[in-house]
Amino acid sequence: MLEQLLIHQPEDPIPFMIQHLHRDNDNGNVALQTSEQQSPHPGEPDLKRVFLYGHRSQKALSAKEVPSALLVQLIQERLAEEDCIKQGWILDGIPETREQALRIQTLGITPRHVIVLSAPDTVLIERNLGKRIDPQTGEIYHTTFDWPPESEIQNRLMVPEDISELETAQKLLEYHRNIIRVIPSYPKILKVISADQPCVDVFYQALTYVQSNHRTNAPFTPRVLLLGPVGSGKSLQAALLAQKYRLVNVCCGQLLKEAVADRTTFGELIQPFFEKEMAVPDSLLMKVLSQRLDQQDCIQKGWVLHGVPRDLDQAHLLNSLGYNPNRVFFLNVPFDSIMERLTLRRIDPVTGERYHLMYKPPPTMEIQARLLQNPKDAEEQVKLKMDLFYRNSADLEQLYGSAITLNGDQDPYTVFEYIESGIINPLPKKIP
Image 1 (cartoon, rainbow, N blue to C red):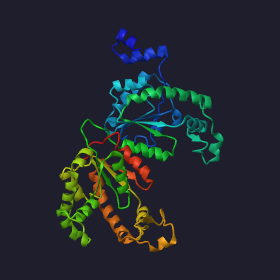
Image 2: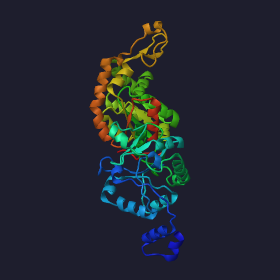
Image 3: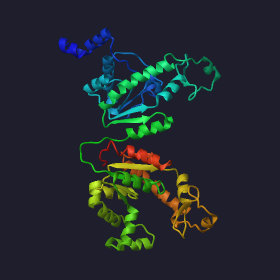
Image 4: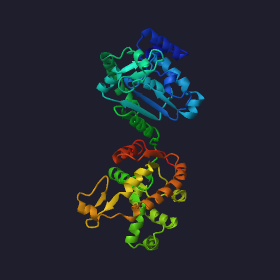
């Protein structure tokens, strides 16, 4: 086709290419969503520029066979409309081939995120074989995952065409041939997500990735800020990040304790507040924090900060001193889970071993009898800290508008994977 374009040099190449493709009948086929299937709420604005695609058997979509050139032209016209320019867009099912990807790039259609849904062929074939369609409404059901409760609907369901095991395997073969040539077209912005897991997990992984921002050419140093209520797991996540990415783990509370223990100049000023169990003034706290963040390892390697800011005033002080984080994560954990995590913690005064009455109970009754509770873990103290956090959290969320909010009430290594997706490729823009 390119050869014919060079030879004939038509004034309007699009109709020429469409005619050429119709004549040769060698164009690729693509899957298009109908308007009803693009969103459960017609007219709902897209918030990002995202390519989302995978093999068709993973998505219950209606497909129309159209020439690639015409399809790309239609997409270009739609994305040039005002709502797409202002609100962003999600493009599903294209490009299916490298030629389509190159044609789209040539027209200046550039996504910020590309997501590929992947699953074993055996899983996809099994899913496809279970599809059923309601001939009256066009609604698609599944014998395992989405069976209608009404017997009337059940009785009229039909097996769709082209979903046999052989036909699905042939489509998968074609998909695998093309996808390995499409993926290199989107380096650094493409993420593969396993579709062989619960839908809600797939959604949250995709959402976390789409909410991230990509690496720029500016020489950013990782500056990670973890926010969340007491007991949300900030310390553990900071330790995991520091270990894997060699960041400096900066815990504000630990810095204050070390200053007092080392009897530094700042430590002598802090000690009276510790003895009276009073909050250390922000001005003194920021001096201790500045002293640590200005050290060479923090400047060169970057840092992960937790324990501060606890309110809007501390956050503004951090920014005024030049310690602006470029990655911010809020760890959300329900109140009941926080109470369960903290109020059941115990310590053995003989060995110093830490236990949890639910997650790590003592091995013997003798040890259990001598366990003590830290006064800070008492129910009243935990409630006070939770109330203080929630009073200030709304202001902090507004200040850090580009922050990523995560569900911290799950396995800590699952939480770490979500945090990683917002840290490693790509690296977000600066947060004001």
